[in-house]
Image (cartoon, rainbow, N blue to C red; front, side, top):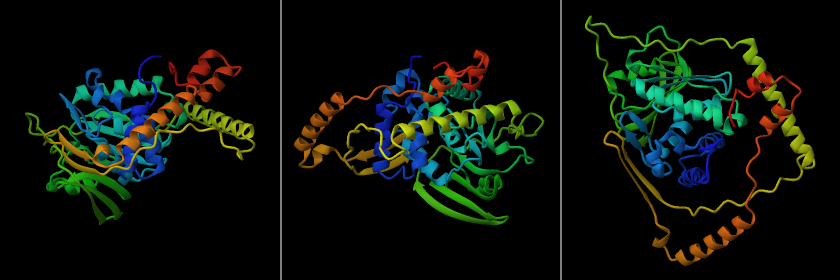
Length: 360
């Protein structure tokens, strides 16, 4: 299958830089960012900018800067099995990364104002599930998106463990947002020019932490119908998984364990590490960030290697590393889960069901 099937080298370099700048700080968040190629969520003609630490907007389609998504993912403190609500879910890029961490028994819902963006997000989600090897490396919680204004969510909806809002929240809507949370839940949103983390510590108790100075476009206020009534947004139901679906999850999990045990036995019960190929060392760089997403301006100053006296040393080091990487170029990664499923003595329709009918 052609196309950007897995996160490429440029995506990895972006993640390396986000780690160096301390935007990405935990292994779970790093794994999620590496698993999904940011460029896959860009229109083809704009992909050359996908790995820059910049926001992008085209019509109603919008992506925040990678450093913003990094801070959001870290602040949400995601864990398998939690419920997540993304207000202003956009392209679905963030929701898909969250889904990699939530696992098959989590809940992953998104509300998006623009129906054309919902269709775009569904196309990108379908492409990820059909073609990305990362899908088989994780137990994925597939996002569900609904169209509507996130300020008009039905009052009888379920509360969530984690909530993110991708637009600037006015002070008058703060309580509305907080009430979407379960006790013990975490809400991350731009509030009064600050990316803010709010933890619900009790029925009427909250802890607030300011994370980063930002300026997001404000939430769009609801438009009432001719009758004067608002159009309530009904979130997807919390459906119980079918027995067939649970069996697929269990079988895939068992096969993954077998593959892991086989890998350990081949490497001497885990005492010997499989050879790893050296990734180009990223020089620590100072990153100063200013974000104005409402006007789609993002400024990031990264100190240029030529600013110091080690430029010649750096060029020599890069040449040596390029030479080494050419000599030690790794083989393309193997999807062992797919290979194992296809080798099983099962009818083809069952094999394809276990593989989620993936094309790759």
